[in-house]
Length: 119
Image 1 (spheres, one colour):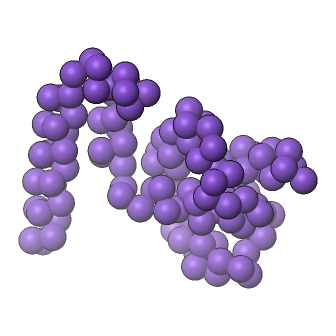
Image 2 (spheres, one colour):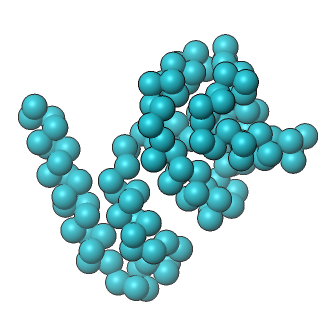
Image 3 (tube, one colour):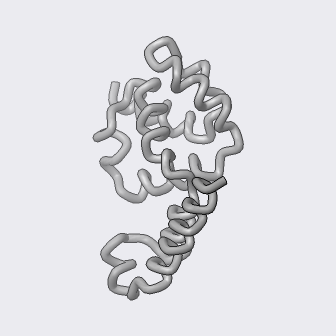
């Protein structure tokens, strides 16, 4: 219970920091205020999940982060996913998992397209 309260307070502080960002700060980030707020509210493990899922498709971290706008879209999509349990199962199996095991992943088609364009 204490950890949940602590997390809520941290998130509240993060949202306040986002509200304090100037338009120039947002431009430097290449994001809108609503995008930054959405990222603050999403589970903190989302970037790691995106990179780990991409690895199943044969991509590395540099591949998925090469295009900033695309990286933000991958994060945003992952952050809205309701299949965290299935995702955790596949990611826990890491090298035993294959792209066909990831049909639930909302980013699977993007990873697949990117992997085929690198081949």
